[in-house]
Figure 1 (cartoon, rainbow, N blue to C red):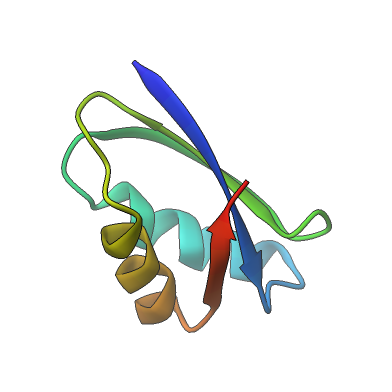
Figure 2 (cartoon, helix red, strand yellow; figure 1 turned 120 degrees about the horizontal axis):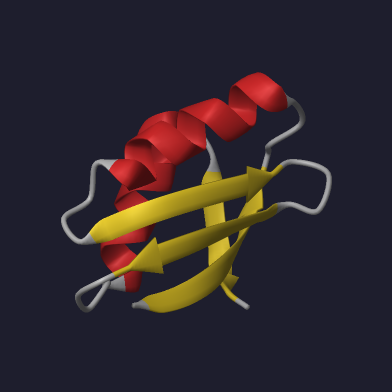
Length: 70
């Protein structure tokens, strides 16, 4: 299993964290997601290669902006 941390802008509350987490969790191979609105980060655990563009699309779908991988 691998882990990646992404910076996401626009999250400000628990609802934001939940929205982002749900969208990323739906990606193939993702086994866990932990969003932290205060830090502006999302930690993603995954079992197969995870393309940054797939994460970017999921974050966009939730209504936020992926800044990049930490």
